[in-house]
Length: 118
Image (cartoon, rainbow, N blue to C red; front, side, top):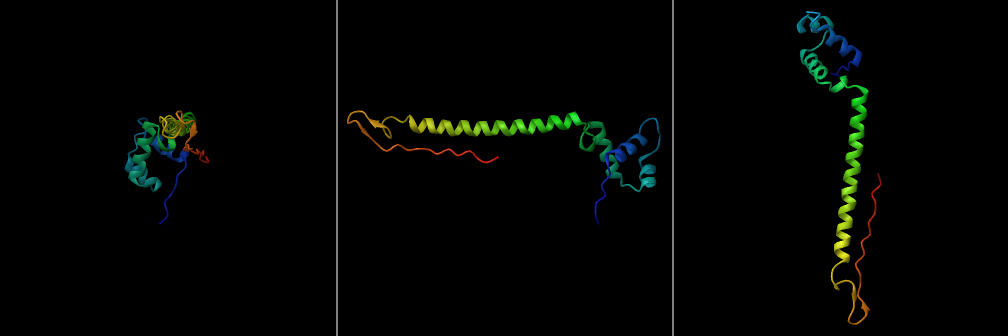
């Protein structure tokens, strides 16, 4: 059995029918429109909290920007951690650097940092 999907306008109409000004009960509305009670209760909850299909465009835009900023922050943290490791490796005393007493260069461990494709 496939799940029925209702558009925002229909859900808004059902929520409006259940408003204080219109004293129809949920049972009456469900019977009249062949709806299931849990769906109607969920729509009422979403309407009151402005979640789900009742989000306005500004909220959706803010959520999108928030996701983008979180991704950028995680990328910056990852780059910072890579640079910290590189600094700690290159700043080890004479173990992998130049031997100042003999002026002989020892092998230097190089780190190749590759940016991930986004």
